[in-house]
Image 1 (cartoon, rainbow, N blue to C red):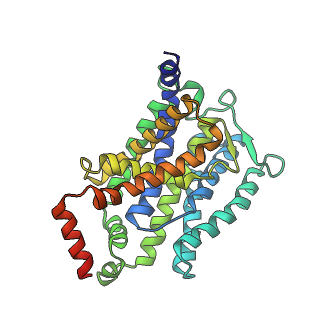
Image 2 (image 1 turned 90 degrees about the horizontal axis):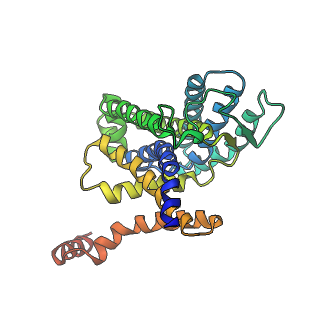
Image 3 (image 1 turned 135 degrees about the vertical axis):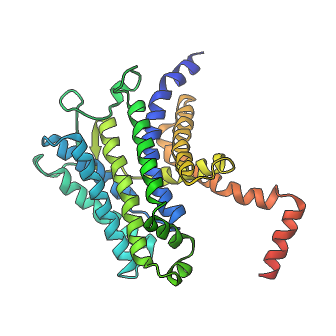
Length: 318
């Protein structure tokens, strides 16, 4: 009985964190699924968003302006990765690693601006500053409950992204991810669309970083470590569970957010069962590995005989 009471008490926090990380996972979805690129910049740009947001709020800037600035900082990080990849010919995964590495020093520099020198951790209190979301109110039945605020935030953001990817520019971006050669044949400048996609992706990640730093009450230089794993987990879990019922592009982004919530509920369930918190990264990697392997296992071991035969013939013809 105590187990269920503890689990129920921790669920609001898991849902709130899932919504924040769901925003970040939508950014990962744009590069991983839409652009078909492996971008590791997110581990750095999440921390950049948190650092920019907290430093600006500590220096008297309104929280809304601070979140916009955090988003722009993330977009700038995505621009750097995009230029590394398109203008310098560096493979996307290496370009992301280079930017991520550089962002560690940049984030330290940002966190030292107006705070008396470079700091690895900057606390921010909801008692002193008007924050958009805070873990303190996660169980409150009020309009400042972070779950309520984040639900509205996610709904608006998904609506805006759905509109954007329906425009000519957004369709060009999707076409680039589907088939770069065909996109070029249609007159699309794929270098521009790749850079734009990376900017949008990392802007969303940095926005999530700004919200996360407010929610947890501090910004930390290492807060983005392992973010790509959580983002991939949300994307894969959402796709594995909801792919058969969610076909619309907006609903696919909703499934990513739901995947992040499910991920954090599972993590909370495991922690409530007494799992060692020091092994969480191992658990995260295992979850992602299993969900990535499920589609392969389904096709390899659980497909109908006719489908297996067709797959085998296709492989032989290739």
